[in-house]
Length: 423
Image 1 (spheres, helix red, strand yellow):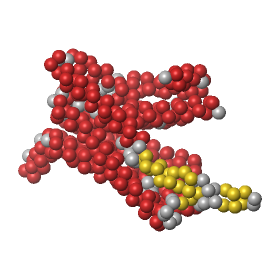
Image 2 (cartoon, one colour):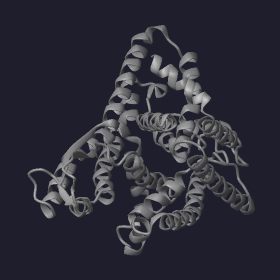
Image 3 (tube, rainbow, N blue to C red):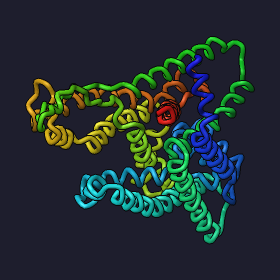
Image 4 (cartoon, rainbow, N blue to C red):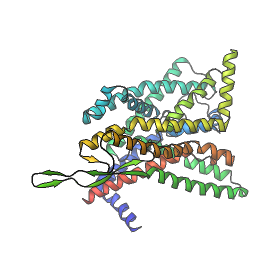
């Protein structure tokens, strides 16, 4: 406890760290102000009805930083920027020029790569804005607008998304922590007072055992997320001894850490993007009289309304995307090559291809745990809603994962800044 109090004191006495924290707070206040400015033509009564009980839109609202539930100018959040980043990372596996730019050209190459990501964010924001606004308009959430007003709304939400992307990058550069993650974190935390007030107003003394069970389950889930997020599988590494002149170098032993949750929340974002299409198709073709389209719409409607079927498919998508994204972002051949070039080896394993196969085998095994964990976290709101029957108690597994991950990362960054201050 004394160590915690001492570190807290250093946070406020260190001028540089204090300025960074104050900058982050100021940026997040601007974000929350913008998240409460609605776009023109919103029917708020219909909006509340449309969002109530819709778990999927609740998950989508998480990645908009809470702006979607208010239909604010920030309703797209940092979603287009995240999507653009994922597409650019996948493009490095297809186009060798992008791979060289990102991995071999140093800081200048990464700046160009970031610029291309920003350029790609603009068309993605326009497409996502048009799709969401059309979905909401077809459900009566938006009143009838003229074509000019509809175009104005698309431009407005696109500009809001770009502004939010800029704020996130400023936080990363001048503040502390990852700006995009902190924006999503702030949106999730901002929704907690509303959830608590809803629980207070609907409080029933007969459901006290249910509330206690919910609290215990929540604490267990948070503990599980912390354990899996921090879990690593160390692979022992030994550096060969080298003689230069009269000195001997190397001979030290260390380890290569492989994270159990290597993919983070990216597979959940992938799965959400795929599950958005059935909802869009149903809403666009709901009034169609074509017999074939009617059959397709009825099938998709049954799929969306069936909580267990929808949740099971969501789980499978997250599971598959976890393996896919891990395979894309983690290259055992490159790791093996770098170890061989630096004179390092895994004890008992031959350098080169054998080391690559050994690392890939371990990665496949631990990714199974990470994939099952992410899939469980993704469908947790569906499970809680089915068990409790209360949408307010449908604890957001994805939201919890983001909150815990951001807090852990922020604590590490602050601790690192304090350590630098001591040195």
